[in-house]
Length: 482
Image 1: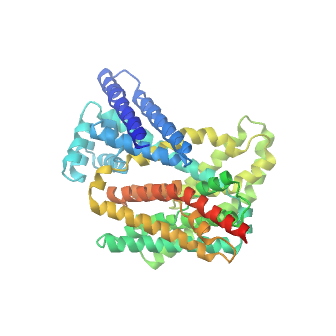
Image 2: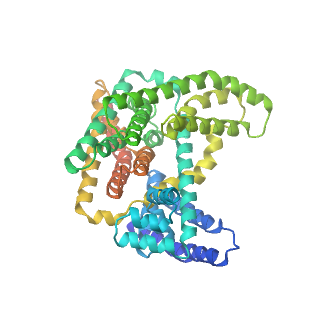
Image 3: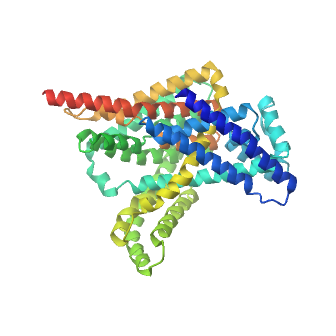
């Protein structure tokens, strides 16, 4: 397995080094060539890496997202070792965005902004060398395009999560799922806050709070996939976990909105936290309530217009509008995308013939969502793991993240396999990565902590399916013996 990934990484790095750099230099030298050319090659390589990684993971019975992360991480770190300019820029993530903003705000060059804002070390000198070289403009263009595309991918991803979540089903899951979700949010949040306070005592409070928020995430899609594969969706444990994961998503998004708002305002107080909480809750209630009332009326009228692809156009329009409104009131755009998904699918199925909106978005999801996960993998800087403190931090974060979700099973009544419920709540998957990327973008999560968090997300996601299969089989055997 390790050899296969290394071979793939070497191939990708080799292609990146020869093709991508050559295209960037040719574009800069000739001037008249279309500047989109290097972007196209970058997207082809990212797509190829995502497809290879996803296929390998699926063959191993694991979620495709793990393969996309691993390929992005291995190929990017290998290419960086050989000083590939595009990868050198992409690995910096939001740091490049801040340099561009500083350059425009202060009317200076990006290179001068890098000299002023970044620490004076070998890594910064390499970045300055790339930006000042012939491939500099092309690497910045590629970064900006890939960054914006990944942000759009996250909005689509959360919109799809909302489409798979039914408001009516949320009402039916009962108090057990609610308490499982509540413990599965509170316990990981406190553990994350406590781990940062113990291991990084000098870290600002905002960092500990954001790590706690990342810990609250649960990837319902991964757990649901395991139950479908095992044909165990009828079990009480499956219904409790899936119901709790839905409630967990809503709670997690509210926590993310609160934490992000506190970080942006720079103040952490009971008053400011209460204001942001009320704002996030009010937005979700109003958006869902308005959507439930307005969606069927608009859907009927749009359906009568008989416009080609009206379902897709109207659905994406609502998702983007809700995302914009969420950003307008100071919340993360993904909160709006999730709310839009909650209210649309049911009415669309009633008013529109043909494929569901989820099916219509499937090709778009396959095309751009892997870009986000590949980019997240690229930003895991393996050189940070040379520091034993970072490795220790990753190990402790992973242990705390596992424990924080496993204890949620204690909320279940007798007769329910509590361990299976707790393990089913354990995988962070794409939701945890989205939270981590937002924290990195806000400057709360640095490179070392981001790498540790991504490792935590990967380990919890990797362990959950096999452990869940074992506990479910054990529970079934025990029930048949009785």
